[in-house]
Length: 162
Image 1 (cartoon, helix red, strand yellow):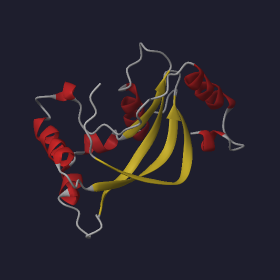
Image 2 (cartoon, helix red, strand yellow):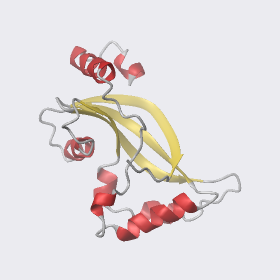
Image 3 (cartoon, one colour):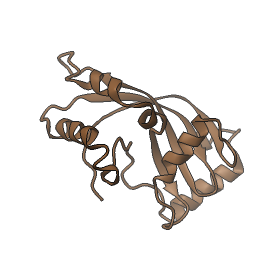
Image 4 (cartoon, helix red, strand yellow):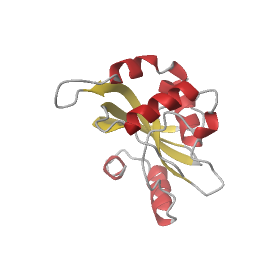
């Protein structure tokens, strides 16, 4: 975020929002991509169980992804996550990760994001997902998007309980 907002074309509004998030300690402490939330149980039990299996695996698979845009409105700032894919382990195996990515439904893939922060504590971080979903559907009212170049990352499935 710092790198993107230091580029000359970055809107002052974005810089001010980012500074306000940092100054008020409203940035996400543990940046992550939520695949399934406990609030979506029991409907998403199968996905929950699959994620749990990866988490409990002593040698879990890794996943790669691209961060393509920084989005914000007057309430939340998020990073758009695309191109989720399995990354082979040192043995060249993906240990079920390819099938996992294939079975993720479009609704989940369309909302993949990292919530950067929310304006205040009354705004739930899930709004970061809604921001991304709306933007991807073309509903850009009130949303500013800043493209990011060549931001590739990887991670693994972990349990995050708050």
